[in-house]
Image 1 (cartoon, rainbow, N blue to C red):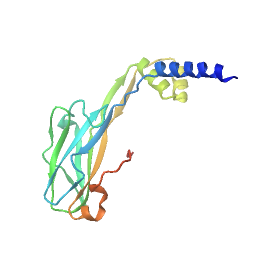
Image 2: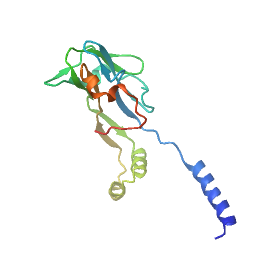
Image 3: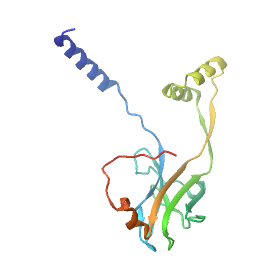
Image 4: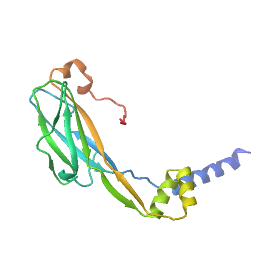
Length: 181
């Protein structure tokens, strides 16, 4: 095929792709610390957020939904005290005299949701869950689906004399990263 013919075809494919793509939004949750390295007896604000744009929360999770909000230290795990909600997040301010890496974690209570049959089928198609689609097609009852879900989030904060030894917490890195549980 000549280059004169290829160029319009490629341009047409590009334009088609440009206008046929839609944005997929993912509702996600994060535990965000205002600093990831602090000195002993300094405080850190740790906020649980749920939204579609990291790290901006859409609305605060209500405190009664929290099953646990804890911090794991070197030798034990303790509850985080003073949890409160603001307009967009739920969290607490934490300080300690114990040096080391402190891992904060939030778990929400399970919640039941019902998805209408058509929405669930659309979700299965979007996820390309062929086996589930086929099972639902065989059943032919087109029932709504009840799902139980919960959310978990965690973050790490370095506290105390660990900061100068590690160094990487006080330096900006020009790489993107994502942690998956």
